[in-house]
Image (cartoon, rainbow, N blue to C red):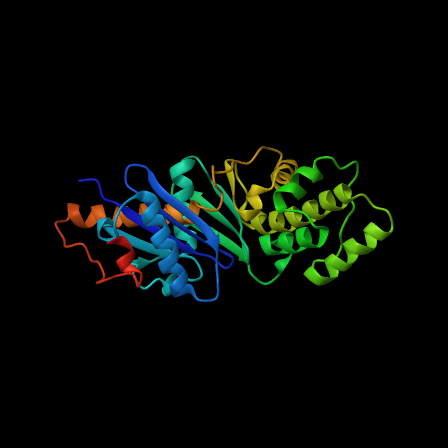
Length: 280
């Protein structure tokens, strides 16, 4: 029997849903709003429509991320650390270090196969997060991916000393007024952000193979800056935002199969979507 399971990852800035059986049947990525419960309903409905299945066809649902407790139809919740580890292992079985650049925090995870050995997290300073990069990109009138491409054309790196988002933005405006090239400013900014994240991750003794995930991994400039800092090329999943949701779906599948092997009843919630009529 091939089970269908789903992972719901409600992060601080982005929400992701993945539905799997032997392969990924559906994946949805969208912004996280203020009302997590309504959002969970909405993205799950979109994923079910994409997969072409009904809510009742899903055997097990596991939620993760900051908003995991606000997924009322989830059968279980697990931390984003555990789910990232499982998701990364499915793509890169040899991975030893994971560096995740999320919207609200950045984190590093040390792995032994899919087992989490240790982790560190920075959730106190925005300077090493995706949101910091987004604010600067908005100030420059650029997209994050566009900013990454631009950084590769830099002739020199303009060091941005401020780590506070507001003051960094003001410093960049001043540098532009002084005639500094945008690409040089962006390259210097990336170097500073990566340096701070690297310093945090180095507490775990970074090992090859290293994987970069999260929104920051979608910027080629960030990846190139990490490559220079690490001394080798880090690996990046096909969609860096989905590893947590994929890991949640896989862990849900592990739990479901484990119950079947032990001849135990599958512990599922009595669950329904508010938008259940959508699937009739």
